[in-house]
Image (cartoon, rainbow, N blue to C red; front, side):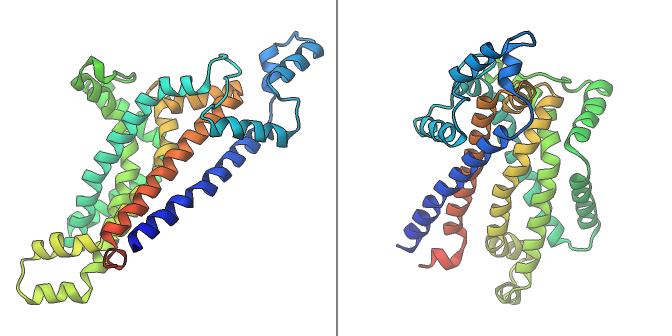
Length: 316
């Protein structure tokens, strides 16, 4: 019952978070500079034509009315119509979500597979050369901007060594080898910050657990050190590690926008940049809601995973 109560409480808490995201997305764009209607009408449009377009798009109504209408359509799954292309926003997002999902998924998997063992090994060999190298690399990962990392990989691995394509995307239908070949550099670019974050948290969390009484008891029983670390200590250090995976999604979302621009990937990040430049408010609002919903959903899954790793919940 305790586990079910925790899951229900955290699921319900998602609703106000998404409501706040919707309000911020709406107000942020409405109060930003620039008039998309004037840009859509053209430089030679007369005031009557601009007023007609504004009325057709519903932008002549008071802001509260606009927000309520947009929110009602949003609850029905309607993200609106693009001002520029006159296509449904949901269609535009569906056409671009594939590359973004592929890059994000490969980045998360690669970062966890590299970051967790790196942090664990650094904690296990605390003070050694690997520990110092891992921490130095993690600091570098935080300090260097994502676009600089991307251009570095392009120069080294594409232009100098010719190992990977400079830009572009190949869907899975063209073959799994070609698919991962095009994703290699974007994944390496996004993963550096994510690996650094996970490795540092894994190291810190495991070092705290290694000083607990049950670890000293396991060592006193004569258990091998690798059994103590990987079987007993790592499970108890998993909660902060799982938590940072969810928190790091925020970094991932921001990095996707930059990375897709650097590598010319036709994903949501590139669509975001194009929509901002065109002041296409409905598309920007739809993308913000998709990114916000994905972030909330992943963090909800992280909260649910606490029921399996947190002994205070699991024991009830």
